[in-house]
Image (cartoon, rainbow, N blue to C red; front, side, top):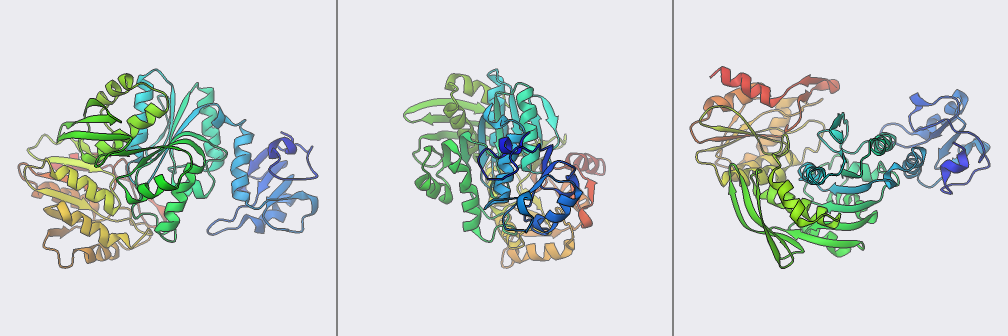
Length: 477
């Protein structure tokens, strides 16, 4: 591709007719004819390697400041943003050839995107999915390393989706993906905001910075679906300028839910679109899932589907792996696996499960290492609100000592009367929870959800699937 075609008037250069054979921001991928984009990251600044990349054969470099490289440098005010646009152009703008539905927020993204994909698929559309658990091209599963892939990888994935005949893409859009311009030149037909609670403050300097990152999605969408049960959602609804609809399970909104009846086997409620009401029976339990499904239905309505075709699809959906997932035990107690790893998510799942717990509610949880330490005592305090018994353990300790993480967690239980046990090793902790469970009890394994690994020191990943651990633990009883 000629350089002037690639730039699409986003930057000026005197090298317009040279042939560009590849684009990258990774020094290891530069080859003769590459356009190298200098991106400043957390630990490495690509600008420091620009001259070396030209010696390696790069045709030109994109940079944010004068590096003294003459006509081989292309200046821009934001190289990361330009790189995202270049990636879109490199693959022929696949994001323009499908309808995009994006979901952002702290909690609920995975459930909402999966429900939307199921609804669209049941209505005859081929759908791509970009998310935390996995990426999907129709029925094909594609490995994912990040909630929102990096710009080149995302556009490459979009290109594959277009070639496979996908008409829609449903995507979890992370704050990282937005701030780092990973979405390229994407423009979303519908964007959903779920909520905002404390998370990722190891990356974002504070909650305001986190909110502003999420808000960026609503500058690149046609229509917004916003949760006004959330304080940040109420603020967002007032601040965005795109077309918008509110959703709520607690108050009057454009899309709302009423008559909610929750059981361990599922939930019944009425979906309200203005003054019109439609009965819904779904297999997923929990008040938070009523909110998630209300958002999903609203998004599908804005995408052009009819309510008569949406509700039957919702009702035959079995749920998302690792999201309030019941693990079969064959015993007189229940085990639920859930990805809840923030204080708000833990409180939501436990509050919901508590409503149908006949015996004790036992919550097993830990906190990740090398992540926001401030939320650790808050996780404990949130769990203590509804659980009758806590088992405090490890999550993904990474390069921190598990005992030190647990010490931070326990600060949130000071002055609290809830009973708790500490079992540092997560496998043994699960065995312990199974051993103490009695008839009618429900054990919630919080934090891992769909993950089938643990992350130890030096980024070592070991296989750890809680479904398998539960099965092994049951054999020991």
